[in-house]
Image (cartoon, rainbow, N blue to C red; front, side, top):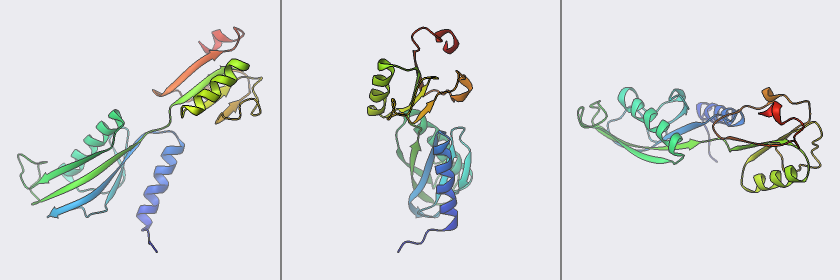
Length: 187
């Protein structure tokens, strides 16, 4: 049986909360330590999209700064990375002479891209199905839309057009298919 520390449970709970809020973040995990280091193998940190460490510990000072910087890069490139931090040389390493080396695996966790479809009808239904098959989080926004017509949609908003219902971000794509009726409102 694996026992999980309270801190680790809190970290994963916070990660789940960020994922539910569709906020990008990264998890950094110390996977190897050689020599002297302030962090231990298995230490983790949760880093937000501004480069702030929300929870956890992967070493102090320059090691933390290097991990935060690399986490931001991983979120931008959308690729995980294994980095090696040289803490043996103050000038050529990360800037702190602890006397050790540390490998840190950084995994970006990015929200699924969202497809927002304004409108209903066969074109919107087909587009919602295609969006789902292409791994988009599909939201349909139209007063006439029903969950029965859009079974693959994550959300169906069938109130009057209210753009405030959608959290538009860099990975939000919008298709206006309202049959000209409310195009001007969405635009």
